[in-house]
Structures are given as C-alpha cells and as structure tokens.
Length: 359
Image 1 (tube, one colour):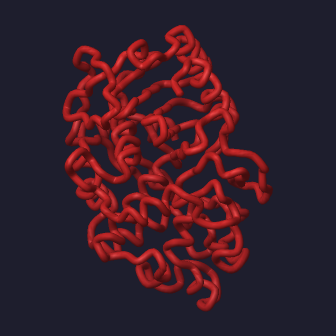
Image 2: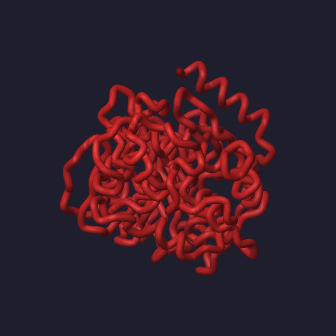
C-alpha cells in the first residue's frame, strides 16, 4: 500500500495543472473582509490578530508530537499560520481520506443545481437496479440523499465496508431509519455523478471546482475507495470556498443556498452532528463510525459551537468556523488513534488553539 501511495504522489506532481507558490508576500493586517488568493497568498501576522504567539508555538510543538505534516490557519482567507514538519513542504501532496467526503457532497450540490441530479430521486435511477443485493422494493427506498446522510440502511457490519459490489451491499434496515457511517454507499456517489454528467468523476470535479478555485490534486482509486490527494494549500482553498458559502471572490461555484445550508446543518435526527457528508459541532449529541451509540455532548466541546468539519482517517482535517472567519487544515499520519473520523486529537487541538487566543 505504501508503495502504491508514493506512486500516486508522483503521478499527481506530474499531472496536476496547478501548483501553489511557496512564497507569500509580506504580512498584512487582516481587515475582516474575505480574501481569495490567486497564485500568491497574502498573510496576516498572529500579532496583528491579537493571538498569543507563545501559545501558538505550543500548538506547533503539540502538532509535531502528533505526527503532523502540514498545518494552516486562515483568518478571513489570509494565511495567519502555516507550518510544515519534517521534509513535508507547501508543495508536498497528501491524502485527504474521508475529508474528501465533504467535497463530494458539495459537488453533488453543483450537479443538482445543474439539473442533472435530484438528491430525492432513487439511486437506481442513475446507476441502474441491482446495485445492491436487496429485494427491489427495499433497494428502491434508497435515494441519493440517503447516500449523502449515511442513512441508506445498508449493513456497515459486512466483512469489507468499503466493498461496492452488490454482494457486499446487504440489508440492515429500511433507508432513512438507521444512521451508520458506511464508505461503500458514499463511494457510489461517484458513479451517480458520472452517469448523470457523462464525464469521469475527475473531469467533472476539475471543471466544477478544482480548476475554478486554483486547487491542485486528483481523485485516485485505491481499492474500492476513491481518495483525493493534494497539497495542504489546496485543501485550504476548498475550506475557504466553504467559509464563503460556495463563492470564490466574484465567481459563484454553488448558487443553491438551500443546498449549502442543508449540507452544513443536521440532515436527520438520528445523528444531529452530521449534515451532508459533513460533521457539525454544537448539536448536543453525535454518533461515531462503527458504533450504534449516541454520545450526549458536542462533537468537539473546546471549539466554537458553529464549527463544522471534513474529517478523515488518521486525522486529516478541514475545520470551518463562520463566526470567527477561520479555516484550519491538518494533514499527517495518525495523531495516536486510528479512527475513521473524530478522535481525541480534535478536542485537544481546539483546546490549545483556544489557549493561544485564536478564537
């Protein structure tokens, strides 16, 4: 697997049509207005924002201890903190893991706005019947929206929950009645978009998001999974697009404000901390992958209540905090617990950011 991963990184370095510069202009004072980078990226000093620089250095020490490779804080779009560890640089590529789910949800919203998908339609209308092993009546209960909300009712306890073949997609409950974090139904959203658009998933994504906001990177098939790999700054660009609610400076990437609100708010009552493939703070309770247990607290209590996040295995993170104008990126190896999404690292990091007066 590691050899495959490094081959993928080489592919991306060769084929990506955009490359972010590693040199930023002289720091400027943050004005509070959203800034959108071009090929260069303006900065704001921690001192100009009133942050505790000693506390911020403590954050860096903690991140290094937790196997971090890249860390970025945007304040209203400007880089207020950027740190790379070891041999990793601003031009290094890394996998997003399940943090890419949030980008797929956003892309699905674009497809619906374009009129080629309706998330309330049956999944089988796009990829044909027989995509599961369910009786047709049960399969036809599953909609694209159920895929976006992890409520397909398909059994996540099969031997390989990544497997997308019909034999692996087995009945557990009627769609909409059970929340379970399940990779396979999510991954099949790629086929829904490909069928509806007539393009490959990479082509559609590049046309609708990547090339329009200056990202680099590719979706790469690794086993059953489709994984996005890019630089940390490209990840930050997508986080900024979320912070701007689908706009990129004067360009509207996603105009459907109702869809964006739905993506970043509770999508169902079973797990209120989950929107459309997006994790939500401040909802009072949450569920986790592989568990059918409800935790009666916020997702990360140390963070602002309006924070939401794209969370990936081994602690790949995009945090967005609208009230504070913050986008925070973390890439690296596992911070200590090999979890599919949330880990203890999230709340610990937010506690240290709070001590550094970042919010």
